[in-house]
Length: 121
View 1 (cartoon, rainbow, N blue to C red):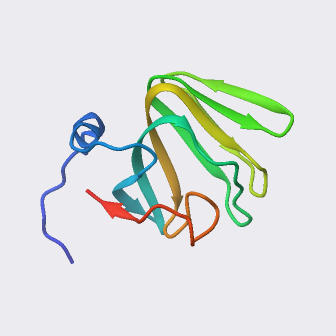
View 2 (cartoon, helix red, strand yellow; view 1 turned 90 degrees about the vertical axis):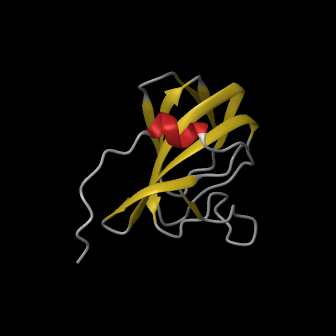
């Protein structure tokens, strides 16, 4: 059992501590899930997650989530959950900062062979 004192996680500070896009960093875990921050810019790949929903919460900037028959536009403080199995592609015309919550080990591309390596900060 850890005896470290409790502390708040500064999401902006965590985001300021790294560069690179589409490379999520785990900042906390709970109940078998990773809480991650990520910087995004440009287009990600079309993909789906067969076993999990995909949660996107915009902290800064704007994110467009392209779906097969719709587009969801998100700004700061807005979130969207892509249902499991649905094809989607996140796009940010300018850099955006996101919070993601996923079961630990979920590949960000839906395919372990092409997924970003898990990084904890």
